[in-house]
Length: 114
Image (cartoon, helix red, strand yellow):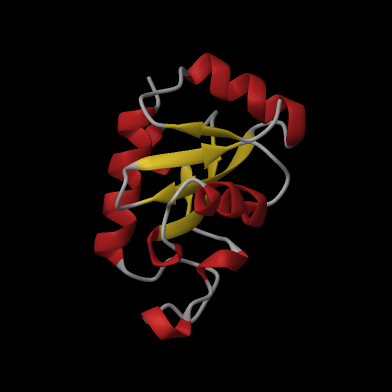
């Protein structure tokens, strides 16, 4: 399956199918924290980022994560992606360093996966 933009919701079963096609128990995801949408699927966070940018998202609102679908929801998000390396926004590593931003991303992800 190609990369998909999730605006309303995706079922956990459908997300698992996408994960199995690529990485098994993990799916790469880019979250737009302003629009409260996410792109899932594909091989690289940068592919999802590019798709969201073509749909009108702004670069500063896009953050890359990995979702480990077999983990409990409180542990299933990994905040690691090359696209997160943004010294100009105060994020100097691949990991999302700001706890409030992590919380916001987790809330968006959990609201979009049913």
